[in-house]
Length: 176
Image (cartoon, rainbow, N blue to C red; front, top):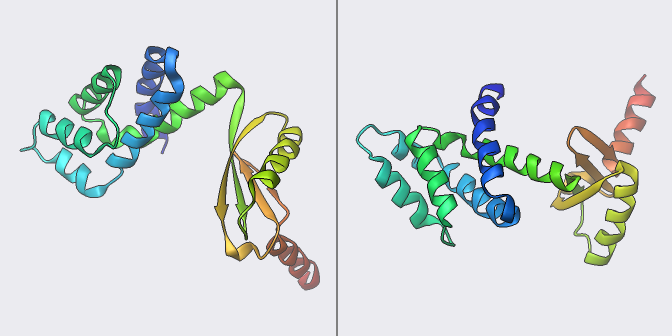
């Protein structure tokens, strides 16, 4: 994936500089573009030599739920003209990293065996922000295999307090 990151980085940085006034809105439409072009059928259509750039642009913008602002349209045209449409998901990841770096926050995924209520999630966010010493953007993913407890992933850091992890530790201790 290093190649994709190398290709995507200049696009993400250029977009980041161009949309400084409205990073949140840009992140929303960029994530939507990334989700759209993540479809194999669309990428095959875009990579077909008989397909024009205008056809690809019209298809992608036609599928979007909300309209693209003018900067978004210009960005999409540039990506399509340079045959980089398949790199859009990586561009979105790098753009989000730049946006998070500016705000001093990180994305965190909380894996839980059960749904977490809003009040409990707010309390958990405060505790995790103290533990990881930065502001966190939490996303909750249900994972029944955990049995109970939670596993939190912030970048390459993981905090695992799940029942499954404890059982795995006990199994390792007993078989050692």
